[in-house]
Image 1: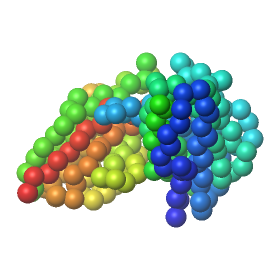
Image 2: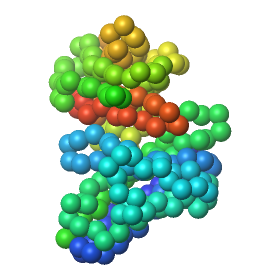
Image 3: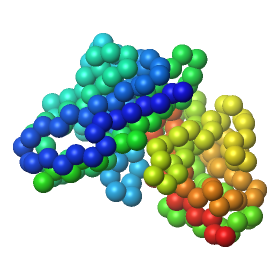
Length: 116
Length: 108
């Protein structure tokens, strides 16, 4: 149990376009979802915390108008990279927490975004 | 400031040898620390949590508040232990601060 999926696994888009990444908790309800960014050979950096039914909380330095997060249900959160630029190319990982009686976060497999 | 430091980016040991992955943290509150592991081509997954004080896959980690450390240890390394290991500090609202990670390679 406690599986988190992400879609798509890879995406290539042109500069100036927007890309949406989905994060789903498949077998549990996630009251909280987290979005991370990972640069090559570097650690995961938390971008924002998303709670179902409320606005996301962004970490310092993360542009909320550029990285739109929606957590419309207890099993789905989306990250939209708006007006993407090559510097937005990265590996984006989501995790889900809040599973009843569990403290840990469950991670998705990640989405590789390449902006050309 | 909240910070997790893993001083070794790469660590290579022989099968059967002891292994220790270092982790130090900086946090003004009461720390809650985790070790996450990422095997090749797999997603990040929880290895162990300091509060549970359990041994998972032969790994243990003890929180030393005096030295602000949470080193991961295993007495006899196995080849299947080769992976990327991340130390993480949980702050408010379940947020995790990750260290840079250590790539552990077990040589046969």
